[in-house]
Image (cartoon, rainbow, N blue to C red; front, side):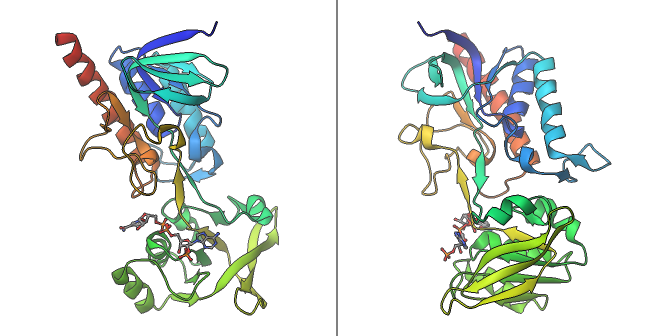
Length: 315
Ligand code: NAP
């Protein structure tokens, strides 16, 4: 028979949102249970240097930061469980989540912190140079490219905003797009076209990233999708901005989501369409996508869980 484990607050996911929700819930004496998922630590586990998480005067490493958050969550009383949730049932309370081996986790409240993943181009060379010039977050890594020439791939709002942001540091930003028109909002497009530091290469795709795996990337092979001709472009960095996918397959049809699959929460709240179920971090945020904003939402979710449980116990 499969085991059943219960807690007042069941947290699914172990990025900054999940760990922060756990820290706050544990310190509110709610004895939270956090199920980590397949890759504990989330997106920061594939980041190297982190310079924008407040509290650290020196540069820190993403995996180290996540290890510290995990230890802090356990230290204050979180029951940390390495399992992967494959099914949820939010139709009645306590809410249910089923683990990979059939363990049933129940919670009087649930905090969903399953995050999102950046889309990558899918090139073998991308894996080699990730963290060595290749990034999916200009806000996080742009600062490391001061005075350098970088390339950004994509044609949506993110790519255009990030290209503009990168001009604050970089000597030149080249935007590569696979078509001859952008899908970004017109006002952003105009700012892009007006910026002298930005060059646009239309109808091209990145075919390969070149460099020295020990030192980092130094150039890209680009292919014209109309003529199939290739060219080499010198570049110190490559920012991939072709969208993100929230990890919400589990919750489809169970919680309200937007067209892109992000869980919808009430304004200024982490409350989802089901009372007692909260969502925090990138799983509900296609705008800021920062560790610190995810952590803030994790805190909100724990506080909202606490208030919800207090209200229920009064009735
Ligand atoms: P997006 O709007 O889905 O745009 C993705 C871009 O990447 C598209 O231009 C797409 O090309 C390109 N692309 C996709 N796969 C590719 C591949 N394999 N190789 C090369 N290019 C590829 O994604 P996003 O820009 O991240 O934005 C996501 C959502 O957040 C959107 O709804 C956006 O409006 C919103 N957002 C809003 C703001 C804002 O309001 N300030 C800021 C950022 C994001 P095609 O155009 O050819 O499909």
